[in-house]
Image (cartoon, one colour):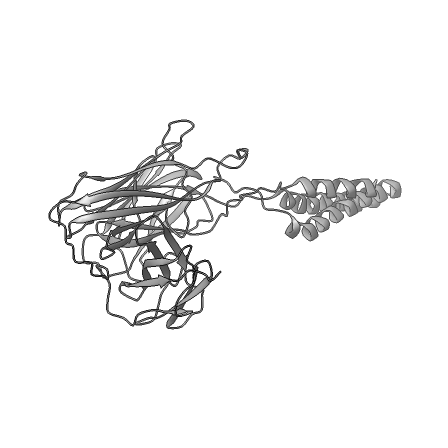
Amino acid sequence: MIRLLCLVAILLLACAAPAAAHNVSAGADLRIAQTIAGMEVTVVVKGTTRVPGPLRIGVITFEPVTGPPIELAVRSVEDGRTVTGVARPALRDPQYTALRVERTGPHELTLRAGNDVAVVPFRVLVERGSGAEFLIYGGFFVAGLLLVGGLLTGALSRPGRAMAVSGGAAVGVTVAVMAIVFEPMLPAGPPDGAAPAVASQAGGRPFVQGRVRTVPARPAPGEEFTVRVDLVDGSTGRPVDDLAVHHEALAHVVVTSEDGRFFRHVHPLRTAPGRLEVRLRADRPGAYLTHVELEREDSGGQLLTGRFSIGGEEDTDPGGGSDGGEPAAPPRTQPAVPVAGRPTTVELDTTGPVRPWLGMSGHLIIRSRDGDFLGHVHEMGSGGSRLHFTFSFPEPGRYLAWAQYALADRIVTVPFTVDVAEAAR
């Protein structure tokens, strides 16, 4: 009987928490970059351990902010319950605002700053007890009851029953101990509030069909305009609203002028299901390119592109550089003349201590002269005041490049060009 019960315990442990390909981690912080009201911020939603309970939200900025605080609203999608508060952006250590949530599951965080409104979908997740915990506590509880029963039976001079009851208690202890031993080896089950498990489509979900445009369609120089990205599932025609947060953002938008003198790397706001928007302003007339990096859940990374024009008489000075950049020593490449298809190391000396931005110490964005190619790689984690990037240029020719990193009170953009040679045959 004891052996049989031990075998049952092992089988229960093996089935206690099924493995999942994309387990959601409860207790982890959600960090998401937003370009809102002209500010580049990172919104931090701290992981929570209990519900009902407080949900702490803070906003980190990368430049001093003197304007009004950002209005916050957290709404439960399931019952509509909404709580509100405010958060004042801070350069490093924000003062977290605690908003009470009553349940786990899907929620929406609304941010309001100036004329901008963003609605960020997220889930409140809390760890749940595992099947192994049930076996541990249940085994010890049953063992305790049986041991007490065995003592009472022995006191009543029934040794046969006492032995049987004591044997049952030993089985309970054995099951509990085995659960303790094997629990670390078991995959964690989904937390409370996780999305229902859905069988993945063969090959994953399809890429989105995206339309990138500006409102108005042809902005005037110096006029504020909106870059709008509409995302649609080609198989259903419905808005795509299942973007995965990657590198701390729902999407990364890079807007450059054709000559490369204008450069913005921003993070659009979700203003409606399947719609992303960000406000910009450009002083120079001419042609501009938009590249949108995003990732759909269970689909992988994708790059959308668009073109638009700023009205007025075009500035034909080829120039170089980038709005918002600051003087700095130009980056160095190894080899000095990169070769197409071979790894190139780009080294850059920073102008001060670097702090993480989008989860990285630095970013390198590279665009072909005609704009048909865009590459985005991250610093190699070398630390210190010198950043290192590795990149393989796909074809020979001239490339426009921008290295970016964050200091204590600003984001630095260093523009440069790279001439890439053709590989010897």
